[in-house]
Amino acid sequence: GKPGEMDLTGLVRVPPEYYVENLVRMIEKANMNKINIYFIKAPIGPHIIETDRDYLFPTQQIPHIHKLYNALLAETVSQFPNAYLVSFSNTIFDKTLMFQDGIHPNDKGHQVIAEALTAKIMGTNGL
Image (spheres, rainbow, N blue to C red):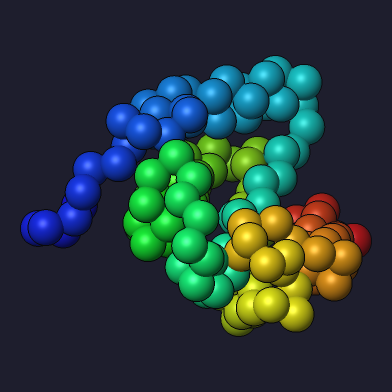
């Protein structure tokens, strides 16, 4: 992390090295079965830091940890030809797409995710 930033990875439920290991095992299992695997880059609402509720670590640090895990996901997926990442670089998951917690998409947010996933699957399968 950056200077002055807390190392919070010891406080997460799934440490980064286990997360990557799990991703690789899922991708390899899909590859063994000759199927493509799609991962959703988890969205986050910028309003998550507005809550006064701490989760496993200070709320202000959640975007930092979220960014770390999404970077690990992108890096891991990029190493496998049968693995694809659905990301939302042009979408802000604000309060119209996320619940108040800023972590979980609401119905409209799920619709955005479903449409992006469908487009990715259709595009990568040449349909």
